[in-house]
View 1 (cartoon, helix red, strand yellow):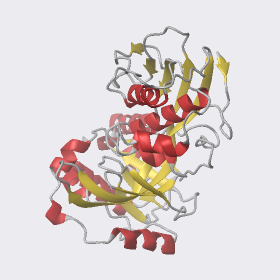
View 2: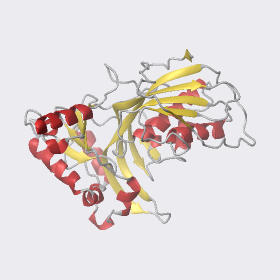
View 3: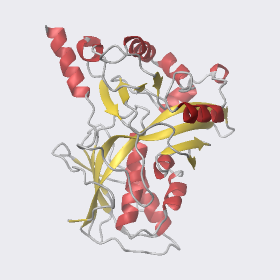
Length: 367
């Protein structure tokens, strides 16, 4: 494979030994009737890319629309917890894309946003190439971190690079809204005020220092976004005005519980009371030194709780047997420059500490 290094990007370690079982996509080849065939991608060309995730620093639900969706207003920020991806152009005549994933629980067929992104890219550009994609997952699913959306955005960007950039970033952003609401945010510079279903993206200056420490804590149980929206009680929403929250964060330069509002906490906590208990325990315990976090809040539709101001995990996460299997990871805010993709953090992508936390808890239980 001829590896093409994207500008400003360190190559990740995609295609790890964990990705043993290949899952062949059964997604049908989209019609390109009337489309101009670009055919710039060459067989054997490849690219290793970092696929980041995101947090919602605040999330307001504005209204329920007639089509059943909800309009929101949210400040998204890309973070450096992410996955490794490797794309390779398959030989001419390949009839389908091939997705290989290190997580055997993730479907590798047409249900996966990576395959949807490749089909969308071909339909919009007329590019004929098929791709092999190796995905080394670190971002947990059902977490509210947009890991799958980040994979889709990264796939669109990398496929466009390998095809000679037939589309602009603005076009990729616009197209991405057709397959998912959170994908578009990754085509921002990293900080974005999003409205509509999340697909209307307004680039904003980062409201916080990029080295603001975050601690991500996710219980083993994930939450389904449709399930959480179904349980949403519009009468129990915050009254905070979204633009006021945006201005408040920019003025304060730090996160606080008063500003990190998430209207989806109510249905998430109603659905999973243990999540509310975890949030309260994190707020009460503080970090490893007992220092109070600046803010403790849920991101997206859950089930990840974000602790701001320190990334030193409190001792109970590794000592309490009830926390076995809890995913724990430090994170930092991430941005990108025009024409470049997001770079993995120094020292490699953050892998979280789920296994370490689980192992420590089991050891404590056995002691």
